[in-house]
Length: 116
Image (cartoon, helix red, strand yellow):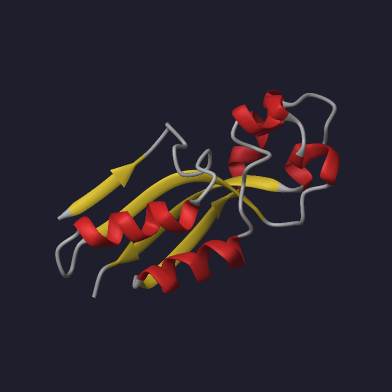
């Protein structure tokens, strides 16, 4: 079984990402794979970015740090966790928030994990 979530950024917009990962783990069979394309943070987001609802609905202000995502996936039971940033995504993400230097903090990434 394979769960692929892309372009919707539904996990990024969730206020409780841990619950999303726990539910994904629950529905997968042993050996099942999770694959997500989402925006992740590689640096702490400033408070003015985190509090900007436009940036939140644009999938940037709600981005979790890569280390936090790894911890959430692991706590949900997933193994073989890989988060691979797509540096080329900075070009289009920059257009989402002109003049905000958002690419100093976030990048699109592929997030993958397997249910043991």
